[in-house]
Image 1 (tube, rainbow, N blue to C red):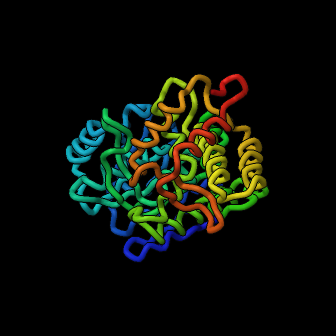
Image 2: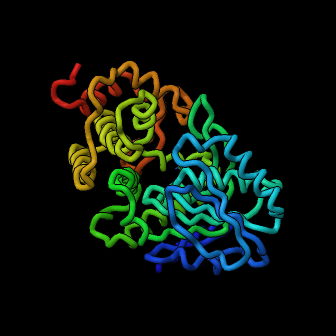
Image 3: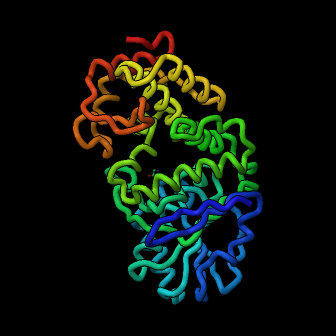
Length: 339
Ligand code: GLY
């Protein structure tokens, strides 16, 4: 088992990584908690033992369940059961569950402790770490939420072998991202150490910039184009697959801006290929549509802002000229889809 401290001054907590760490749950629940509301989805099918009185609350399956109405239902059910401020929520699942249950914990009785038992690769290296919680609105993803740090996070790597292959691949897109956020040759590490290395990178960034005033936005490396691809819709790409394409786009763009060498672009292509992830746009996506969508991304604070690699590492760059964006989009089109 590997322990990674998230050394926030107000809310320090540990992330435990390893095969079977979900069995540490009773030990990491805050002292004094008498009752635990376990929130999960029926499809997850993983039982946990909080070591004290508990009840399981199932939320519906799928991203469409990540809504205000699910939060309201959960809070009503907590209340009917008599959950108090000195009790605790335990979220068992991937990012949909930890985001939604984390938000319910953040607002129920103005905030009660939450522990995440993360069951997916994407959740273990990203969603469950760092205290971002929230739900979607019909108008967009993650538009309502709160920063609410967990009391502990358990990343049970033994569960990853049970994931559907595409769900696992989706996590690999985020893993590929960490290679360029200081992770280096992550693919040389055994799984537990690789997950722990990603958690350690994220923990360090979160401690430096908990509320995303600056550096935390670098965790969105590869995501500006990925979100545009996802919003353009109907392309059957999982989030992590879209992030992989977004990483190649970001490298091509940084190269055109003179920020990185051709060899560094090739390194991006090598890492994405090593995880067997896509590196080209889905067919038929128009550049003007993608550019308009990237401009709408909530992370684009001042005109077109991109998180780009460069001599000082990955950082946010504003005011990127349109012609370079168009050229970088063309560079990630497959043969036959070039304008
Ligand atoms: N997923 C990016 C962040 O937690 O900031």
